[in-house]
Length: 115
Image (tube, rainbow, N blue to C red; front, side, top):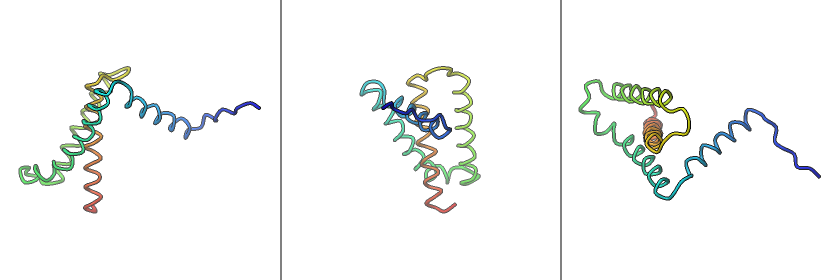
């Protein structure tokens, strides 16, 4: 009996890409993995606290803070896509995880507030 290979569907390509991205995050030594995980958690912590601490200081309120963060994060993504061609270095992976944690915290906060 021969083993059947999965068909090359869009779902299979996406799931294989996600598995590859996850395994890329887990490659390396324990220091590398711990720094990447700490960056993700620090991004989440910063995203959870940025609106509460910066909101009174910013003249435009919550919409202005969110717009500023979205513009800064989009600028970071554009910069990364132009500078990194192959496998990203540890610095870029830390920046990516900070960004992912920050966006996740902001989305979670918006969900909790119902906005």
